[in-house]
Image: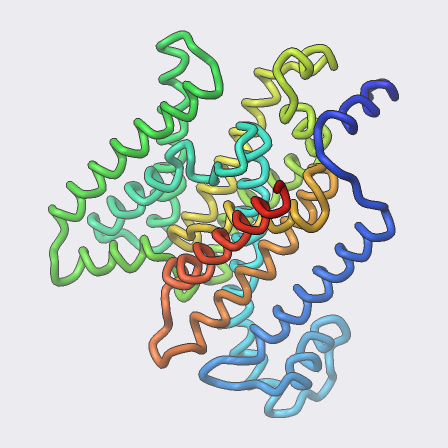
Length: 357
């Protein structure tokens, strides 16, 4: 436990502005309720529409099983369990993981422009998945390949500063740019080698992101890699505040910067790699959501990370609903996140600039 005086010092130095506890709890309750609403909406709408009331009955029947369910309950329960529940859960966890990962990286690098794939994890995951597709592997093997590729990319990124004997944050970012560029070149080679009639289209579609192929079995494999690092980062919120200080101030508070930074990198990398393995490349979530949550509750990670987690989950479920409903053919996640995320991020930057003035 940190001394009381140290806690006051971190509160004074680590974030600008503060929010009262009742107002913070109000936003937590608000976004929790909104998340619950969009989850029920996601389970209800689609090509086979299910009335909102039927969805609620099905959910309550899981908590208190109905002895003699009606025919519509049997039919619609199958639709929800096998088709909509897996992708809705995947959207929730991927959105939360990318938001928490992005917020953690932004605190670690003291830069609000940082995104979860800054260390090359997304590029490495794409190479792993593309290699598995090229070898005609199954969906589980593709997810394993994506996870392994992301981890290898981050390992190379962390290794480069060690070889140069420069462990500064700037060198780590530069190493991420180097590895990301190298991985992009390797990805181009894989696409060049792929069969243009079959494999190339599959690789392209996968890299654009989608929850269409998510099943409960694939969720079981990936879920521990999403839940455990997220819980660890939520428990490290106070230390993330300390990392946002200068290295001298952080050391004066008795924090081992090297170990803390490594723990944040490992957890954030696992979150991003598992997200890419489950849904493909999904951009802008880890960049926009932390900004928006910071505007609402302030820069204190103790309050900002839980809000970012709820907002990321809600945003991704809404995006998944739009992908299914906007056109007869399901859109890819990367299309809508880019269309919505880029202008929204520009709006946030303009508003922040006006606030500073």
